[in-house]
Length: 609
Image 1: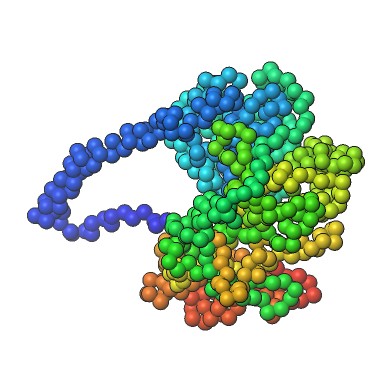
Image 2: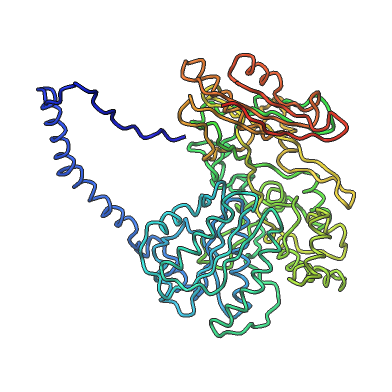
C-alpha cells in the first residue's frame, strides 16, 4: 500500500516566525543545490535522449539485422514476427509464412529480438508487403522475453508507419486478468503510428481451444489478404518442405549434439551466465514424496545451484528442460521402421534464413525425439494436414484432412478424436496403421519440447545454494484406455539423488517474475495457495521468518491453504504448523475438501488486519 502524503503541521499559537542563522544557511544550501541541478544535472539529463536515439539508428547491412534487406534479397513480401515464450506463437508464425506461397506470395517468420524493428517503416519499400504479428502474453500482461525490446520500442517511438500494412493474432488465456494484453497493445499502437490494419485482431484463448481460434482466424485472414492485394489463391495444396534431410554416415562423434540447446558440449563444460539457451545442470540434492497417502504422487525437489552464480528471489520461476519417455521414443522408431541412431541434419532450404535447423544439428533421431521434439501432446492441425499425404488408406487421408480444416465437422472431429482423447503422435500412428510418414518429415513438423516452469518454493535468503520445487506428478487414463503421463513431472519423479553412483542432474535456469512480497516487511500479507499452489508462498513464508529473525519483520502473514485430505496431502504440514506456533504465520486457515461426505472448499473470511 502506498504511503499517505505527509503535509507540514501548522505553527502553534505564540511561536515566533523568524529566520535564524541556521535557517539562512539551509536556504543558501538549498538554493545552491537548485542551481547545480538546473545548470549541470539538467544539462546532463538532456543528453540522454540523444544517446537513446543513436542506439536505434538503422544498422549497416553487414550487421545482418535488417529484415528489410533480407526480404529484398530473397524476394519476400510478407514477414511474420512472433513473440513466443513456449513456442506456440513461433509455430503459428511458421504456418502463416508457409501459407503465403499458396496465395502467390512469399513469407518469412522472424524473431523480433534478432532484427532492428525501427526499420518497420521501410516495409513500404517492398511492393504488396505485409507484417503479421503473432504475439503471446506472458504472466501479468507482459510481453515474452524475445519481444521485450520491440514492445519497449513501440512504447517510445513516434516514427510514422504510414503505408505499412499489418495484422495481429494474439495468444493468451482468459483466466488471467490481462488477457491478450501484448497482442492488443501491438495492434492498437501500430494503428496509432499510422499503419493500416488489413484484418481484425485475432484472439486466441489457451483456456479454451487455442488451435481452433487460430485456424478460424487464419481461414478468414487469407481471403482478406487476397482481396486487399488483389491476388488469387494458387490452389496449390501440396506439402511444402522447409528443411532437407542430410544423413551423416561418417562424422566425428564430438561434433554431434546429444541434448545441448545451443553450444555444443555445453553440458560437459558449463560456463555462466546460465539462461534459456545455456541451462545449468543442477544436481538433485533431495527428492522426496510430500503426501502421506492417496493415489497421487506429490513431490519436493531441491536442486543444488552451488558455484553456478545463479541468483533468485522469492516468487521467481525455475525453468526445467525435461526428456521424453524412452519407451515412447522407441515405440515411435518401431512404428516408423527407423534406425533411431542414424546421425542426421535437417537443413533449411532457405539459405538466407536465420533459423538453419529446426533443432540443434547434427544429431540422431533418438536425441531429437528425446530432447528436442514434443511427442507427448496431441499434435496441432497443421501436422495432421502435412502427414495426411502419407496415409495409404483414402479414408484415413480424408479424415486427417477434415480434422485439419476449419469446417464445423472437422473441428468437432479434431476436438473429439485428438484433443479429448489426448492422442499424441504415437497413438495416432498406432490407430491409423496406413499412416507411415517419413521420420525426417515428422521431425520437421513436430513442435519443440519446451521448458516447464515451476514457482520456486524456497527463499534465497534461507537457501542461497538451492532451489526448491513442489509439483504433482501428472498421470491419468485417457478415453482410449491409454495412460497419459506428464513429461516433466514423471521425469523429475525418477530423478533420484544418485544414479549408479553418479549424481542426477536437471538442466534449468531462473526466470524472473513480478510476483513479489511487499517491499516493506511491516506490510500485512494474505496468501491463498491450495494444493501445489502453495509453492511460491513457502518461499515467502521462509523469507518472512528470516526477516523476523533479523528483527526486520513485523507484518501480519495470513495463509489460506486447501487440499483433499488432511491425513494424505496436507503439504508441508509440519513446517506450516511450526511457522504458526512461532508467530511467523499470524493465521493459518485450512480446508480439506474430501474429508466429509460433501465436498467442502476453501472459503475466505475476514482476517482482522
